[in-house]
Picture 1 (cartoon, rainbow, N blue to C red):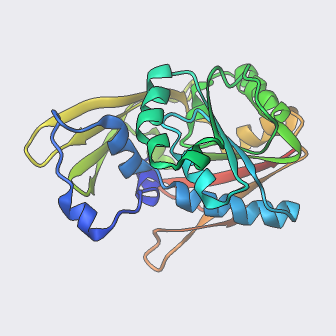
Picture 2: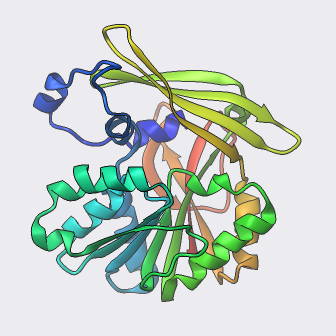
Amino acid sequence: MPKTAAKKKKRRSASARRRATYTAATADKHHLYERAVQNPEAEIEFIDRTFRKLRGRTPAVLREDFCGTAFMACTWVRGRRTNQSIGVDLDRPTLQWAIANNLSWLNDEERTRVELICDDVMKVRAAPADIIAAFNFSYFIFKSRATLLDYFKAARRGLKEDGLFYLDCYGGYEAQDVMEEPRKCAGFTYVWDQAHFNPITSETLCHIHFRFPDGTKMNRAFSYDWRLWSIAEIRELLAEAGFTRSTVYWEGSDEDGEGNGIFRPSTKGEVCAGWVSYLIAEK
């Protein structure tokens, strides 16, 4: 979702931004994705703050489901020496990229606190986690109620007794449009392409493209065949999975009506073209 991407840009120094030059022939799609879409520092700050408020203690073990390049898992262990992370993903080449590119910037001791597992999030066996995070709408890949319910049950089983399950979701009346939305990043343009939407099934097909200053393009660097789930549906399924409570964290607005990046508990959202929210489910 374009609004999400704008909120999740990886922080870089001004000098690093000036040095960035990309072409379709030389750019790495995973690197571009991290720069355009992810901001694990901000999400970890949100996790830490809300976990302490809800549970009265500091979390240590984070499991990142659908972890991809394990950017969050690697960032998590740098925050505290007590932190451990588990990254779970089915795609072995992407996990290998994570090892070569993200674990490589950790020191030897930090690397011992990261475990990457190539497995199905429905079946994985891992140490119980304080937190399971399923961000970047990855669980939208489950298109039926039965399948999404099974995943939520699996996530609940993977938590410690007072563990919390973190998800994000998006929507708004533009979420059902067939449209492209470009956004300038340092050294390239990120394009979110909503290529198809079926209002009967809520299935959506989206792509990410990258454009470069020399005129070259990286089309369909990533594609997503999803169901666009509503917050109400997600919360109902979380309750069916056995979570005792779920809370929506809605983003506030600045003076221009744009998202301000501050998410607070809310029972009422605003009607807008595009929104992004977090949900926290309590075991």
